[in-house]
Image (cartoon, rainbow, N blue to C red; front, side, top):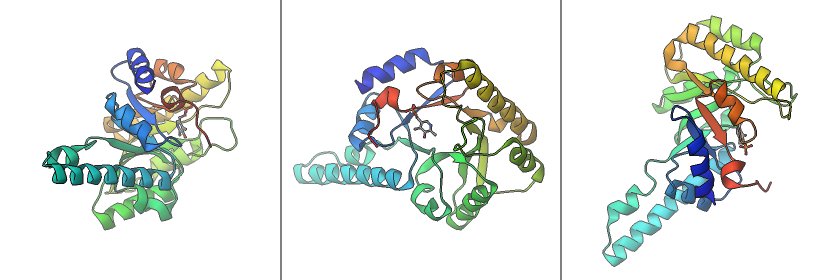
Length: 240
Ligand SMILES: *Cc1c(COP(=O)(O)O)cnc(C)c1O
């Protein structure tokens, strides 16, 4: 099922759009199955859940290594198991949880404040890691959605502060939860505009636009998304 869902999506997505499989609330086995079907990028939205999945992967590898050692099998195969998996973080990140997330992820989509950006930068300086991030922009009319407002975004672009341990790669946003396509298109066009402002300030290295989920990825792709974050269409409904 997971494999068929992935193949269906990949047939549809242009080659330039990266597919981020959102595995939150699904067990590690579902990730392993998607990996077996060729998927490499997975995203989680809660620090603890990401961390425990990485621990599960570690214990899988260890189990395989012990088995290989006992049976004279190939240890390198065990060590290499899912070695090229990439983890992304897409949820609200508390500054006291950075150490559970930043060592393991190749991209944080959800930097929703300058304070968090600063915290990631100082963590990186202390731990010798440069973290790639996206600036989460508040584009929806849903009250609860976090992210930079246009005012905060403009202030951020004009502050001109150097942060050596973060690389801003682009923007991320979530459209209003609605069936009204026009509202979704308006939300996404705000994000595309903010992406342009970001590139004007930081240059072409920050051209990623993370937009589109199971319900609205077709519109997002049509409007210039470079990364879609898809959960339920791959893994099925989540049980909270
Ligand atoms: C859960 C989540 C998704 C995936 O949602 P689906 O509707 O299951 O595709 C995408 N982005 C973020 C930020 C999420 O929290």
